[in-house]
Image (cartoon, rainbow, N blue to C red; front, side, top):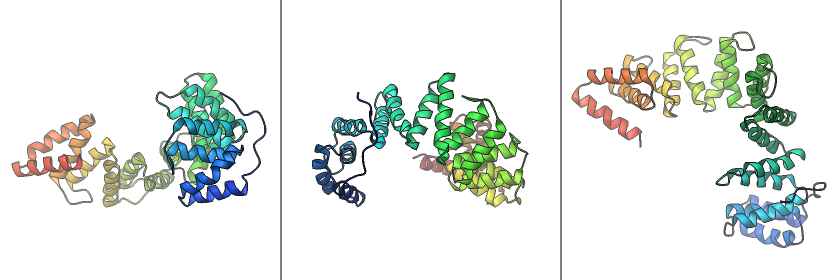
Length: 323
């Protein structure tokens, strides 16, 4: 396996640029025709493009080995995108070749490829030893210097847990805040949780509700459930049982068992919505299927309250939503 041994290549030629333009508009056959000769002549950019076409089977038959070959040629010329792609290929192989992935991500990361820095850090963190965790933090810091939100959030987690660095919950909260303000939904959830629990910062239920909402609107299921709780109880926000039910439902539909349980309670008691005992049974049953014990008890209790017709209706609705 060759490694890059010199500076990155010059920018793409006009033919290479025309190939990328064709690629962007979905004309993969033209892209391949433009890149093929250029790649043969040694253009790293054309080799990168040909590798993409072969890897994804765009405009020609998919061929992972030919893709690898093109990317290795481009990587040997110092093209970090090619090294990154080789890292992804190695990581996604079956079985995954973690050693090769770390090597290729390392080449790209050293060249300043931010996503490679992030991916390399994740691999190092997953290695499970302290030395690797420490190195992971250093790569996340390099990616964070470019404003990478995944890296900022990961630095927050590392500092909160004391993994690869000294435990520092205040620093963790600062990293979460930087990523959350840039739109990172997991960081928004982590920041909201820190604000709610006073972890590394003063307890601030209004701030917690704000960031739970940001994460919830981005589709984070636990944030949706937590926002529902705050709305139901009027913590940090005006109490609104109807809005709480809507967020419980959004989370429940994503499969979060506690939210399914809460949705069951909402429907059983008519909190902010019209009471629906068969519907309550459905959500209790779905949560119980995931091992949620209180939901299993509620499911069995509600089942006893249903008429035979309601039981048939509830079971049919559960079967329908399970498809």
